[in-house]
Image (tube, rainbow, N blue to C red):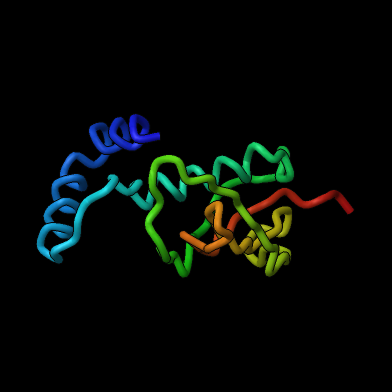
Length: 129
């Protein structure tokens, strides 16, 4: 919602609003609605994935995020969904009791267009042999 976007901006990125408005005015654009900060969109997408419960208790912690891309702005009222694909799963070389999983995230809007994407690399618990 617009209220959630405003609260996020006030708390975590007070200068973002000024930069976004300045950039739109400078480009001669008409501002219809404030876009959501990209990190807020990533947080929403990540939260949708976590709440799915697929990881359960097996996620140990993140190692890296790669290939982060912000393809389109997200506005209040947009409906988001998270699409995930496991692209790699292997034993950790340095910690044999853990696995390393690479997950490709795509956050899509109500039109099916990808608004944000990234690869997440995390440690996961391995099943005992």
